[in-house]
Image (cartoon, rainbow, N blue to C red; front, side, top):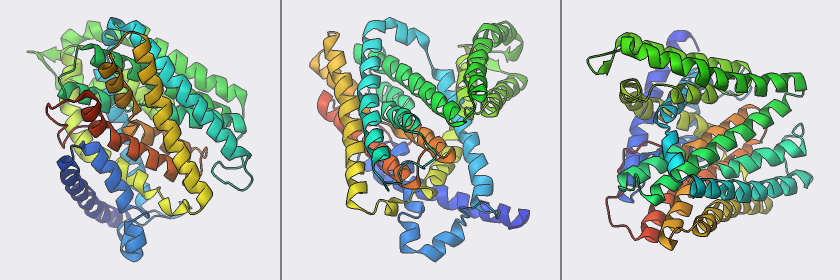
Length: 427
């Protein structure tokens, strides 16, 4: 396709994606499900799993997709635009990240976090060992060593939909309560640790330990630089960047530029752009600057850019590849390990630290949702060649089902009759 043809086609795709996501969202809202669930499902439905199955010619015309990447097609622009959406979204997550909440209930948060990491990680690693050792399973590419497969699948099981968790707590009026504080603290710690595990896998797969040192050392140096140098500089500069209680245009540009530089650096050292974007969000001053950046970035990111990521992810999801009894058995095992390992372990840890049965059940339910965070990590795994398309589809199913479970289960276990999660809720 020429540049003009690509642009014309992109606008048509954009209209279809946005309208379809909102249509699915309207249906999902009737069942108390957040918009993120609708967009996850819509992305899969627009891909080869349904649209491509029922109308292959029309789907191939609307979303031309060359797996060899030898011609310019949908991937030429959908991938970079979706990565921009991810970077901006993780920047927002960093802007809203609050260390003070973790400190308030540190003991319970750490206990729930450790349990919510250890149990699902062990179960995921055991599943990876079973899959990797089975001849002809093809769920992990041949180049992926056993230890990398075990760490990656373990990390996938550990992920929590932290941003979604935070918004459920907000809409339920649980901010500042024991349940809300412990869940947010544990979710933040778990996701941070899961991203560290992913960084180890990506560094190890590079096959060169000097590169691994660059990856991990460069990431650590970046975090130190961000918190020790950039954060205090931004505090001092904030008075020049904020005027009459709101962020100036120059301040907004500096915020976006720092986010972009952070994303560029962590991509350059072969981690991923989301790491740098999150850290840059976390070091922004927690006053007018962070507030205004979120207010300006969030609407466009959530309503326009993230649906493109879900569609890109859905175009890579081929549920038809799960075409044998063994693969469906593995799909069930992954789902069972994810639910029992994460939700069950977090519930037991919460009870062990003195929380009530209702509070512990609520925490276990919230921590079990995977949401967008899971899709991010498995898309990275697919891009880097850590997992096959069949295992990718399996993990997408797990992410969708655990996210679908979160709201109704939370309502049930807490017996809450307060407002349900509204349709336009961010992921």
